[in-house]
Image (cartoon, rainbow, N blue to C red; front, side, top):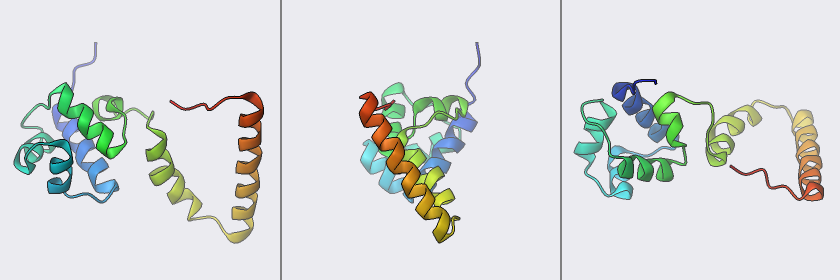
Length: 119
């Protein structure tokens, strides 16, 4: 069994919070805790309860396992808003057109298969 590294959990929370452009105060308010307590979690000095970790995960739209184990598995919102959006911004106009056509083809395929493929 893998031990949890609470310093790294805190760093991942901080990084995810910054990725979405939230302050500690904003996240704390959304999660119904104090910014001071959130700061101690982000610094690895306190261990968040499962309930609080769930609220943080929901607000930041990042999977809990991403915080716990630095998993590549993330919520679709995180993938779209962070990973894919950064890559899309690097495409030139021609490749953006190809991307749109590819996405349209994937959506048609998804509809034909009756699959939503959501996690």
